[in-house]
Image 1: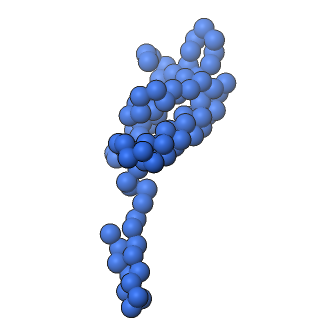
Image 2 (image 1 turned 135 degrees about the vertical axis):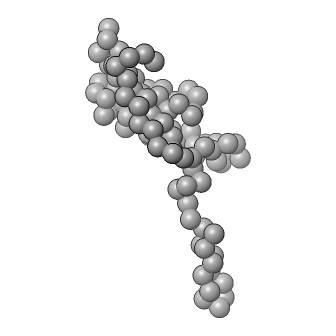
Image 3 (image 1 turned 90 degrees about the vertical axis):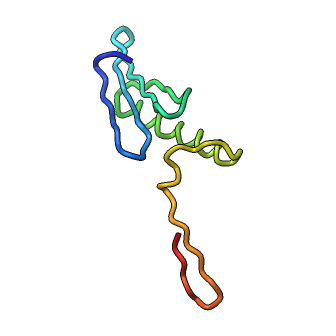
Length: 90
């Protein structure tokens, strides 16, 4: 992607890069850490929403198949309750 791009970048999160395609006036959004997660939208917001949805689908598929899932571990907090009502948080 070239100029006219906006990069949303946060530590330990997935990066969405957007670009306005001048010729077609469509927006492209790509999740940089997930090869192949690239979508088009009529607006930048539409492209970002579609990129997020596709990224979640790809991550779910990878998780199900035991593959690498960058950024997903920060979504979960593990909590175990024992028979003595003791709560262990990992």
